Length: 159
Ligand SMILES: [Fe+2]
Image (cartoon, rainbow, N blue to C red):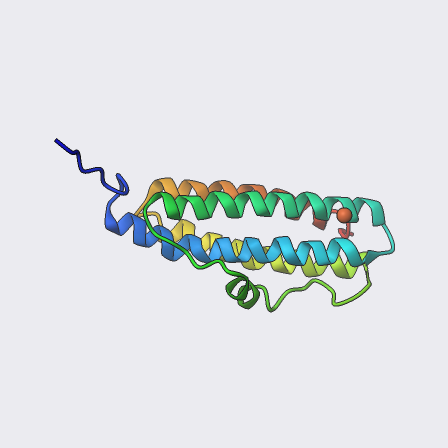
């Protein structure tokens, strides 16, 4: 006799809440991978090597975190629309420079991008508190890592 296997062991509320709160995080992190590269390529001036190289580390982290959050949504049986157009809309207000820029300006701009993702993570942590603690845990873990990277960047411009 054939056994029916459910798409997910989670309930519909957990799945829809995870999608609602983690999808913006995925888009913001995907945008950060693109805008972080733009910053990596165009930074100039003081601390060039440090900022240039760390921006690549940030891009790698952001890509990994986006994958983690996206796969949590999919694991609960829902799709997400993270095509380039959606990512572009999310990342349209980037602080990454359009061309060459001084490192202090680049760092401040990418920190502003990070802070927008952190705001979405805060909303996710709050919103998932009563609907899916496993997804909330993912948001908390990403926030912890992103705040560490923010510190690394901020330390380049701290007085
Ligand atoms: Fe590079």
